[in-house]
Image 1 (spheres, each protein chain N blue to C red):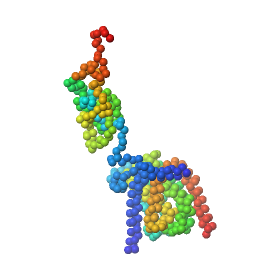
Image 2: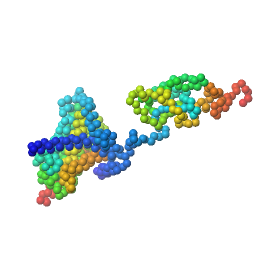
Image 3: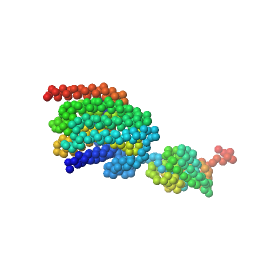
Length: 316
Length: 171
């Protein structure tokens, strides 16, 4: 029985994450509509929930076309990479006390590493499409990842210093008296910005930017390969929301309700915030994005790290 | 930075606004009286056909979707033998209504003309004719026109003076 327990957790986590990623298509469309005074999909099934099924049937039955000028093996591999790496990162996410697939002692490092592998998918997709818009999208994704990855890790280090551990479970337990969003507010804001950039969501969707690059890196993709990019993007959103919840908002800790419910509620709130970003904010120019990352946020993250370290040393 | 936060808050507040969508099949949109929808052929107040088959509508139509064949009845009154509008080509521009000298062809506030077969969008004369006078209830072209037809000689139309006697010297 005890040997089956990890398998059970894996099945539950996979089921929840993949279903949620599919359901987020509906959630996003309904929420965007709500904020634009529309209804969104409300015809198929109760509240339009059947739209998820209809969309996936459509994606699966569409012609899955590989352009003759594409680099075929890489073209096929790229969409799988983004889903695989984002799912890999869920291995260390604790949904409740002890409910985790792999309780690594370097959980945060593993998370950062796995989620940044996702950029390979975008770059390879852009490169193998053999299309100038796709390549431009891939290049932008690379530059954006490089510049935002740096202070994404640095802004999390404040939390690590305060908790004294890289293990996500320990970090959550260390927030029993006060959520880290209060002492680490600057770190939280920076991690949120970096997280949006990491998932390539608006306002940082320069790799995709429909208005300039058709659809950026996935211009040449169709059918379920295109769908894989979307599922990967939504899994990324869930992942970043879960990380925000764990590192700054006390994970599963909360009164009355059981732990997993609190974790789910907090994560959903952040997912809604991601969608609100998409509904409200315009996309910056590429040079603005880069100079923001390197000239403003990186020094701020370093400063935050220094001040946190000094404060922890002084108060010890 | 402040403007970003303000726009985030402003967009969030829209969650509590009334939605502007009209749930179409259940709720109908209110159409303007002069909405340009399905095209009809109207009749005189006394029930005769208004169309005189002058072909102006067919000429002005930018998509050439109107075709008709003129003929005459025993009184010398022109009317279309057949009249056909291909609604799969029609763009509802209303030029035909503007060109029509007799107010016969009119656009109505109705757009629910969906069909499963393209052929069914070709409307014949019996599909286009309506029983009433449409937007101009009192207008009767043959009563005001100066042309003579059977049953109405020159000078007998409404507000028309008797024709001048060319052989008389009197004014």
